[in-house]
Amino acid sequence: MDQTLWPLYQKIYNQLVNDIKSGKYLPGARLPSEKELSDQYGVSRITSKKALEKLEDAGLIERVAGKGSFVRNVELSDKKSSSSSLSTDSLIGVILADFADSFGTRLLYWIESRCRELGYSIVLRRSQDDKSLEEQSIQELLRLGVKGIIIMPVHGEFYSETILRLILDKFPLVFVDRQLEGLEASFVGTDCVAAAQRGVDYLFELGHRSISFISPKSTHTSTIEARLDGFVRSHAEHGIAIDRDILMTDLEMIVSLDYVKIKHEKDILRVQEFLSSHKEISAVVADEFNVALVVHEAARRIGLDVPGDLSILCFDYPYFSPGPILYTHIRQYEDRMGSIAAEMIVKKINENGPVEKILLPFDLVYGLSTASIT
Image 1: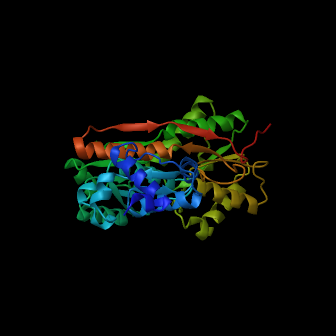
Image 2: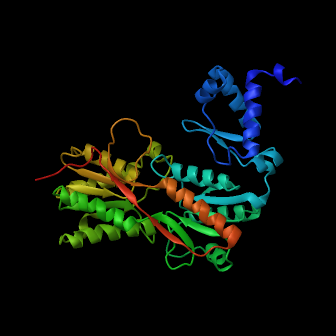
């Protein structure tokens, strides 16, 4: 067909295909937006949008709402017509306990995004913090022929025999967010000790002295134990004794997309009774965002105002939540955590890289849930 007769969107499409194949836009690079293309070629945004949609249909780019259009691995796009035909040589397994807006969704996004940039696709499984589901997920991924696994391990009194065997066999494995202490396996996560210590320091700066720590069951869970450690260290540095009676580390809840729907009435009632029995508590460190929701609801039911009567500081918060920030919280760098986990696993697959343990920084973000007391 005479190129002069091609519709305008096809001309834009052809030029972008040539730019991608020539290396002008490398895998992972962001293409010009619909508006930028319409300005560049003097066409309507409908026309530029159609060109980008055709690139997406061809498997050359991925369009991410609110972020733009990004080049996929061209070699994969040329050779593969669908994800079902991908070679197992390019598969990486990912096992997360679960994911939610407050923590996990962005982590998963950046794991997938960085893996894709490096020429790999991911297969996702959720363990829901259940050892049997974790075991089932690992076996399924191994049967699929994944070349490595990024895992947020389930904790308990005993370590998974399958995970131990994979480590001994030097199978590419990276722990993310949580680690299994004492094992020679790569890990990337937040410095939870320092993060918790900074959070409690801030509450002390506000004048609080009777500070509670509330979390799900903490049995051998590295992140919760690390946060408790930071909680203890802050008290020690301020010369303030910890009242063990106002620590609650056995809620039933787990991080789950269903949690807000379920509401875990049992947990709310327990915290309600706990706060009623310990009126001296002026602040609570909640181990996660959902715990903060439970504490806030329990406080509301017994007539406590947040932050007037009770301050709440938590770990994590919905990243794209509109309006004012409701809770003072520790923000983790999920983008860096996910990207580094992906780079670690690919390095292990390709180079049998060394064991690395990386602790990431954090931010203390001020919200409406904390206030000073006299």
